[in-house]
Amino acid sequence: MHLYLVLTATSSLLSKTIKLYTRASYNHASIALMPSLNDLASFGRKDLNNPFIGGFVREDISHDFFLNARCSIYSCEITLDEYKHIQEQINYFHQHKEDLRYNLLGLITLAVNIDYQRNRAFFCSEFIATILEDSGLYEFSKKPHMVTPQDLQELAIFTHIYTGTISNYLRQLQKQALILEYA
Image (cartoon, rainbow, N blue to C red; front, side, top):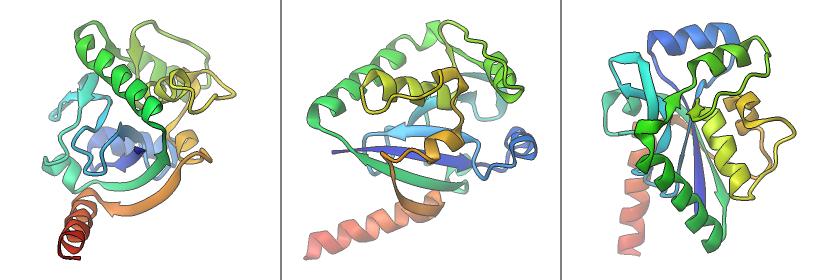
């Protein structure tokens, strides 16, 4: 069983603005428990046309917004118990999504290196850091609200498996499935 970390860079204005400031290749992080990424979860836009309305989201990778996005995908081998625990955590966030907020203020304070934590509010990398810590997969040397997508990318528990567009990644998965089917 595996946990997948997906780092993306879209062509949106907000994404480009963040990239100008961070100079990082990727500025959004999501996680999935399936290699197909059909269960991709994060904190981000609830409406793809409005970057300012955010919260917990199950991201639809079949939308052009994601299909054409550049990404790096990493995987981490996990036990069945860790898998179940992470699945329960994600389900909790999904069930309580109306009570949770996107942590835009936390994103701003992170950018200027101010340690400020909001209750029941997350940004993408803060959400993933929380999942990793709560599941016992990784203990950060800093608080989850101080973790960036770049910090996640550098974790030794993850192995890089792909860089390119999400659409090309999905095509590769389909090819592999066909090869296995006929093997």
